[in-house]
Image 1 (tube, helix red, strand yellow):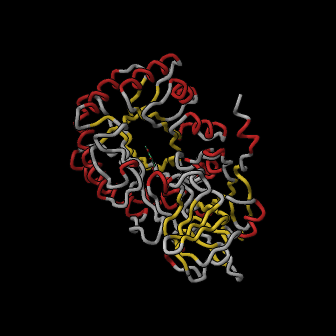
Image 2 (cartoon, helix red, strand yellow):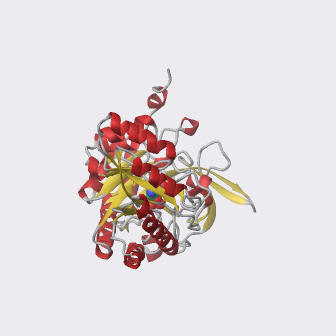
Image 3 (cartoon, rainbow, N blue to C red):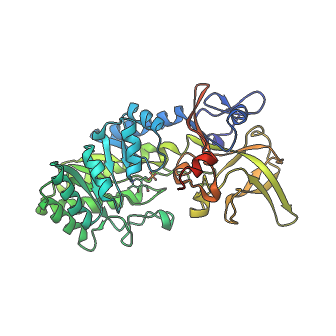
Amino acid sequence: MLNEDIKNILPMTSQVNDEGILEIGGCNLEEISNYYGTPLYIYDENTIRNICKEFVNEFKESYPNSHISYSSKAFSSPYLTKILEEENLGIDVVSGGELSVLQHSKFPSNKVNFHGNNKSYEELKQSVDWNIETITLDSFDEISLLNKIASELSKNQKVLIRVSPSVDPKTHILTTTGTLDSKFGFPIETGQAEEAIKLTTKMSNLDLQGIHFHLGSPIFETEPYVLAINYVLEFAHQQRKNGLNLKIFNPGGGFAVSYTSMDKTPPTVKEYANAISETIIKKCDELSLPKPHLIVEPGRSIVARSGVAIYKIGSIKNIPGVRKYVSIDGGMGDNIRPALYQSKYSIFHVTRILEKPTEKVTVVGKFCESGDILSNESLLPKLKYGDLIISATSGAYNIAMSSNYNMYCRPTIIIVNNGNHKVIKRRETHEDLLSHFV
Ligand SMILES: Cc1ncc(COP(=O)(O)O)c(C=O)c1O
C-alpha cells in the first residue's frame, strides 16, 4: 500500500499491483513504458476531472456567481480542452497559439479570455474576430490598439483591466507578478491603473467589464489573496467616479500544490475558495458595492497532480564520498522548472515503489548542461541501468515549457483512464525537427 504522503502527490487513481508495480488509471506503468517508449508523459483523466469538479463546486458553494477559467499556459492540448468543456470550465490563453488550440477544438469562444503584457496586432485581431468573451488589457498601447481593431471589425469588445496591487505573495521572484516592479498590470500605487480606466471608458469600441489581478504562483497562503482583494475592491469602489461598473472581478490563479512530502501543505481548494469569497462578500457589503461575477483562473492546481513523467535510467556515475549521479533519458528539455526556479520533484521507482530507499542520488537529465538536474537528493532503492522511474506532479508547466534544446524530440503524451490508454501527442521525430529548416 502507498503511504498517504506519497498518495497525495501522485494521481488519484495510483495503486501498486500484486507484483509491486505502480499503476495509474488502471494501467501498469512498466507495460505502458515498454509499449510507448520513454520519456513518456502520462495524464490521468480521472484526476483532472475530479479536480475540475472540486474547483467548480467549492467556488459555487462559497460564491454562487462564480466561474472557473483554466489557465491553459500550464498545459494546452485539444484533448484537455474537451475535458474542460465537459466539466464546465472556461479557458484563459496568453498567445495566439493557445487560442488556436481552442479554435481547433471548437471550444465555445464566449468562455475564453486572453491575457498577456504584449499581445500582437494579429493575436488581438484573432481574438476579436473569433468573438472571445474578454480580453485583459495590460498596457496603454494595447488599449488604443484593441479599440482600433474592434472598430475596424465593427465589434464592441468586452475587456478587463489588469492591475498590479503591490502585494508580494512570497513565492519565487521569477513567478511573482503582482508587485509594483513587474512587467504585468497597471500599478494602482502610481495612478496608472486609474489612467487606464479613464482611457478605456472613453474608447468607442471597448466595453469595460471589470478588474483582474494575478499575484504569482504558487501561493501557499490565503493571506496575500485577502490583502490584495481588499485593496483592489477599495480601488474599484473609488473608480466608480471614472465610470467603472465592476461586473467582473478576477483575482487570478496561483493556487499551490504539493510537489514533495517536504512541502508546506497548501490550503485546500475549499480554503482558497472560502477565503476569496468571504473577503469579496465582506468588502462589497462594507463599500455598498454590488457583488461582481467572480472568475478565478487556476492552471497548475488543475493539472499538476494528474501528470507524471516516466524516464529510463541510463548511465550511473558514482563519485565516492561526493555524489552518485543517475542519468535519465529526458531532463530540462521536458522539464525546465528545476533549472529555472529550483523546483523540487518527487522521484519514485516504477517497479519497486514500495521498497525501502537505500541510497541518496542526484537525478540528472541528458542535456549538455551541468544545471540539468531533475532532483538533487532523491532517496531511492538501488538503481541500475534500464530501471524506470517517475517524476510525480509533472502535469503543469513541464511539457508547456518544453523545448527542442540539443535537438531533443519532445516526448509522447498519453492519457489513461479506467485501464485504457491513448496518445494525445505523439513523440517528435528528427524529421519533425528538420521540417522547420529552409
Ligand atoms: C494571469 C495569470 N493567470 C493565471 C495563472 C495561473 O497560475 P497557476 O498555474 O499557478 O494557477 C498565471 C500563471 O502565471 C497567470 O499569469
